[in-house]
Image (cartoon, rainbow, N blue to C red):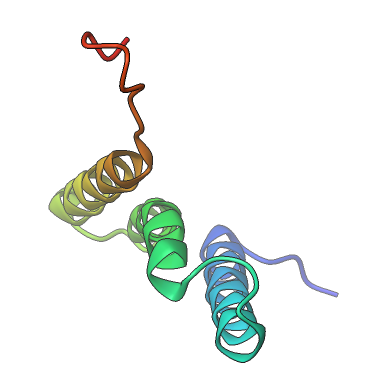
Length: 95
């Protein structure tokens, strides 16, 4: 049995992540359990962007692909944090 190279391994992880999203979205649609699909998307997109950035390096894509994907991962992560951030009503400083 031949070992997977880096690109193939990243592809397996990307596919597994997409299958996870599909299964969890299905669970929400059929039983209303777990996270809403939009919430799942905000949770999974940063990791997918990071994996795609790694894949771009593994296939020898130009540097700007990695830079764009890393920027997208950071922006998606910040959007996820913003959607989850709760400040206490009695704390005007937000700390």
